[in-house]
Image 1 (tube, rainbow, N blue to C red):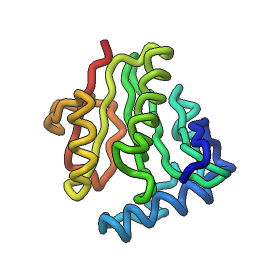
Image 2: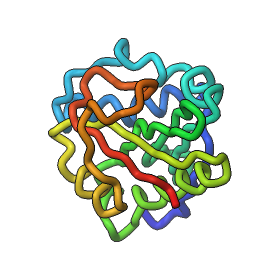
Image 3: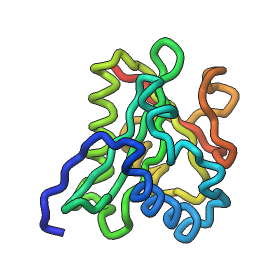
Length: 164
């Protein structure tokens, strides 16, 4: 764990590593009933993320993918956070990897005139809820999401952050 960690944009060429990171966390660690078939975005980052004006980033060390975060831009100034996952052994405040990923995304949003960030998550990811709340995200009702928010089927809990 002493190697240098870099955060860089990813492309569909990175999809095998992305799938190998995300699916086990979703299915095995948190028992979220979702499959790769239900996440075609993982295989086509250009269409689902880059073409919207968003991006998909990965934290890497020695070519191993340690974490991801993605942004779908929508509307005039909206952004939807997706695919925020960090390998279990790299979680926590000590390394601050999740924080670095989020800050990378927020910096991109500020540079791209995205002023409102939204995200959906599931009840099982309680540590994620605390993480977002520590970063000033406010929990909102599904009815308060923008009409063009790209909702995922399993999501039941929603957050919003207005970037100042």
